[in-house]
Length: 297
Image 1 (cartoon, rainbow, N blue to C red):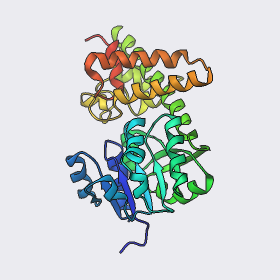
Image 2 (tube, helix red, strand yellow):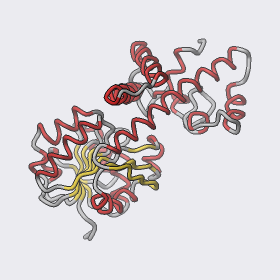
Image 3 (cartoon, rainbow, N blue to C red):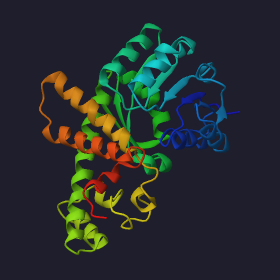
């Protein structure tokens, strides 16, 4: 029997499933839950136990981890469905979702009122990083809570940054994703321009990847099909980080900027581009599909 603390993991999507699997491989007893039966079946194959509900999953758990799509899902889970009330007093709660900073603070305050330590720990690194266990965790919350969480986070990633109090992890994640969304869009535009002039997309991307336009978009998640074999663009933009999720994150960045009177003209422009990508029917595809707004068929 494992001497490691029991972990409840709620949310087995593209990111959550491999994260839960890595915890199970590290020897943690994991009790997981997701509304998708297929996701639960995959988690069971990876060594996780499956609970009948979120409330059942958290009972007896020393650590509760959630990885959900948006603020409303996190608030509904912890505050609307009574999950906080079902968590053992003294347990540690780690929310890895990317949500509004205000939502993170709201749930953290409710957790503290119940005697629960909670950190917001959104991640960077994409589905590939989740599968490889190389994620970056961007943390907001008390330092003592982070130290309790550190061994668990290290089983799923390799970089941990403490950004400040509750909600600070979410602010930093929005800054990161805003930059990523802008970079992906302009990288796609640049490659599309080169291809329109007869350049080979792969050769152009290889040049960019070792030049001043080098980025994650050129080296890991290239938006042009056929350039990188394992990139979503080379499999019909399936998997990866959904364009709808990027649109959500950019919307949160715009809201965060408005809250402090900060100008983010490129961030707002990128949000509009991903909104157009959604309207074109590509919201469920990887966010690199934004290149199709400018690529000639």
